[in-house]
Image 1 (tube, rainbow, N blue to C red):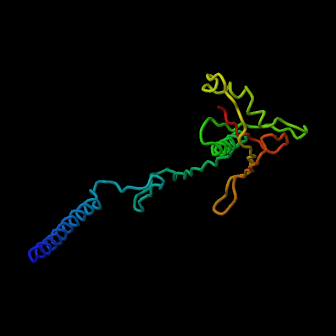
Image 2: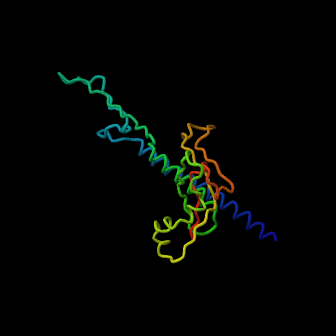
Image 3: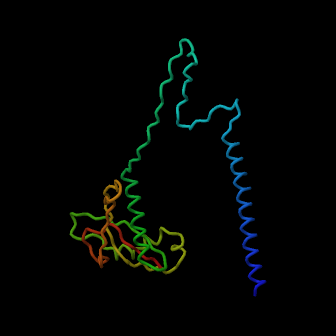
Length: 194
């Protein structure tokens, strides 16, 4: 018992001493590396950030007839979303929603046109059953019997994106049970094709 305790104590003391010595050696090596990096060779030019203009040395004479260089300021491009890009973003939002409606199978967010002058427009249930959709996808085209059914409808608005924290952004409205409705409202149908 006593010999085991002594062995443990000796091992602990030995480990502590080794760790201290190792830390000292590592710290010395790190300090040497840092000092070498900080020192520059006398002929090496001072490094500057790529966006910083080069400074003129105060005592250096300027060349005769030389005009001071005009500062070139790069303007950041402001990306504006055009109508086509906006529709593409709406397509992505609609597809994400539709994908959340199924566990397995092919799902498509299909744009649904709406004419307010008509009393009744195409229903999502009819759009999803359309053979026109099946012809647009190679995998579905290869299958002999493909059935389409509506699993959800939504309206994705084309409002502006968020301006920052705590501001509202893109808006959408989810319709419950509107697959058979011919009224305007949903502008996307979630079509599961299998």
